[in-house]
Structure formats: structure tokens, C-alpha cells
Image (cartoon, rainbow, N blue to C red):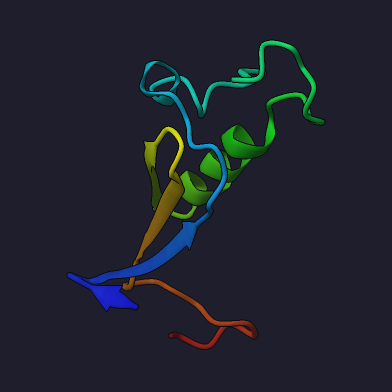
Length: 89
């Protein structure tokens, strides 16, 4: 959707959520909340996503409650937005 000159995309999950103490570090390279490393991955997905989003003048935000899942909100400025093929959105 579009809000205040920004294209807004929201992703929600119903997973375990992210502990409040870990939320400030979730976009750091190689940071993992899974201390036992029982979940696949090396902690690069969210940092890479953030770098790509910021390279396009966007922002990504996290809201999470342990036991209730997480919501990621991505915002890009409408001005300069391009659709596939180079046509303005």
C-alpha cells in the first residue's frame, strides 16, 4: 500500500517471536538468536535484506513479541520508484 509518500510492504509470521533483548541486534551480520544453532543459517539473511532495502532509499523495521510472532515493515519512497522495465510506478 502507499502511505505518506512511501510504498509500504508488511510481512508477518506466527513463529516464536524475537526476544526484546535481541531485537536491537537482529540486523547485525552473523547474529543469531538461536544459541544452540539448531536452526539452519548463518545470520546473514536480514543484514543482506536491510542493505538492499537501504540501497534503494528504503527502511526496514521490526516489531516482535516473544510467543506471538514478528512483523517486518519495509518502506520505499514513491518518488523514483520504478516498475519492471523502467516504467515509473
